[in-house]
Length: 153
Image (cartoon, rainbow, N blue to C red):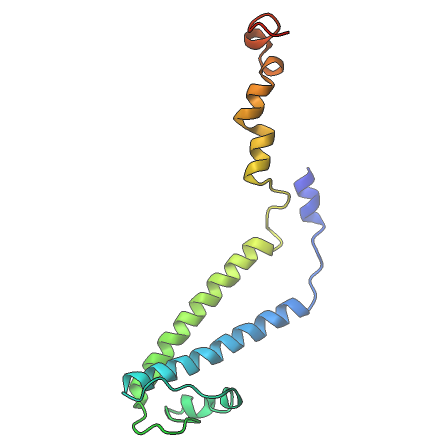
């Protein structure tokens, strides 16, 4: 009864939370492209090179066009298009998987179908556990533990 009443009156959703989630996922996808490009350049023998914050978004068209040195200075032999695309795809798969798992966890934790009012393990032990059963044994089973059965009144 109580659980049903809580589900019938959910918190009203506003636009801020979905907008923040969309922006966070888009930023993670952009960072995945940059990570894939850095890994491709590392495997090509250029060392670990990352773009500065100013070029984080402006270098995306060059990277997606197959230029692994877009926005990076001092890259002698940039990675070829094949390894670049392969590493970007692997990085994006990892980002999408992480985002999906995070969104699933968040939906289960804070979504509208979550269980509300669940007791912690300590609270359940206090209310239903063995300690309480033994303490109240005379009331629960008076035929076994009632007055005069164990010497207590």
